Length: 182
Length: 171
Image 1 (cartoon, rainbow over the protein chains, first blue to last red):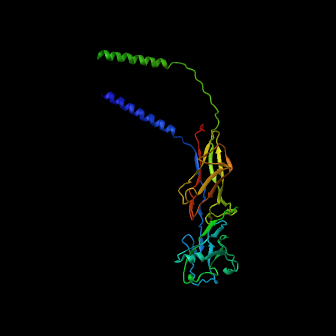
Image 2: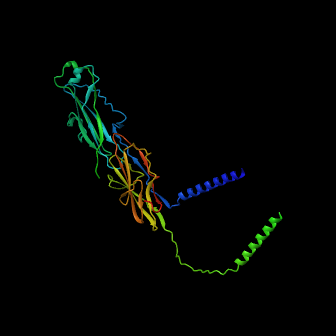
Image 3: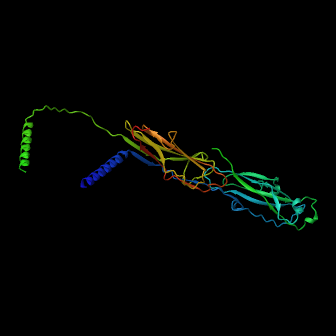
């Protein structure tokens, strides 16, 4: 009985020693070296376009026009668009003011007679002298700004039934980064 | 018991005789010295000098601490390396360490690749000889839609290079 236990113990020790030797054999001691790059952190710029000083991604900008619109007196309004990005490289955006939609009026007749046009303000800044069309666009470089003008008008033969009516006018404004080469 | 004692005594006597006789054997022997020379260990080392970031849009070197990247731009980090591999059977794998998909940029908006002397590093580049005037180039290409990754950050501070010897004879 004692002999059997001794044999079992011996076999166990032999197995353990063999496994240990095999394990050590697989763990090569090899050279290795590491060098840090010190490359720092890359940060992306902010894509910030402001409408009258407010970031355009926050929401639209409301232009209140209290003056009365008549067939002979169009109304003008303007919005200041600034490219306020903090990009490291040159960063120019194309800003487009699209076609207007008229809503919020109790009379479809008013909507049918209203003409809404847009333009980029001339260098004088006077919207009255702008070249109006159905839409307008311009390129604005980093740190620069432009003024878009709106003109709302009625035809000369607008019916008198349009008097004292009001309407809400919405214009989409989009800003898109322009690809720049080196 | 008596028989056992006698047997043991006779055996001891025989062994003593054998030992006595063995001491009188005359055997040849010779010795000579050999000049095996010296064994000199090789060297494996990797040293990195200060790198420089450049921008394809800014048109030159930039200070990455103050620079803000925009979509469509590619930043390049060029770093001089000195690689020492001295040893007749020495080979090592060059790898880039510390890069992580966990960064502040939206998935798929950034493509980071590294080359060593013009060869893509990928998962590892096998080297077999020294290259004292090496250059590791990491490009950071940024592309995004809408307002993706605005104000995002990609931390390269833990990025480095490793040179690990491979077991001789392995491919």
